[in-house]
Image (cartoon, rainbow, N blue to C red; front, top):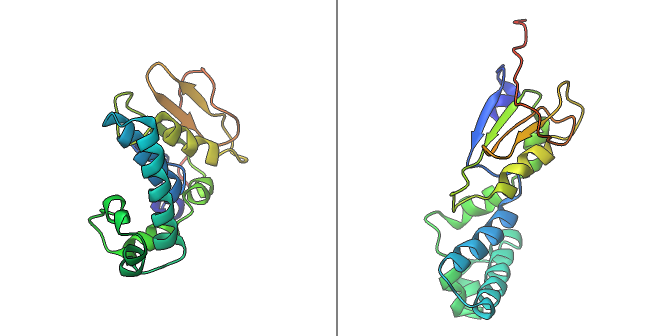
Length: 167
């Protein structure tokens, strides 16, 4: 993450996630299916197929052709505008570990009408940062904004970012 290697005073994050790609994919797939109004049993069937297909494609590294030969219905849950190699590369990234490396204040902004990421995705960024930072985290849930430097769990205290003196 660039903010871990380049000197910055803080970062603002909007519509991002603090979980692994696999976790995000499954949660987002369920959210999108529910928004489409699918019946719970249909959602469960699609989710089982998605988990099966993603695990084989992204984790085990099985070829898409081999996967689809085994279960042709998986084509409906593997529609990505990127190569399988790129998807595997993204799936291998441990986002919580990257967020934990940051030693700068982070302002997380979450839109309550966002249908691509959830409040939990944004809060996961803060949870990843619960290490030994110098300022406490705080949350302003009515505005869907949180600050974190990682020391404590978010609270209802006002969100403040203090400038660090220049080196």
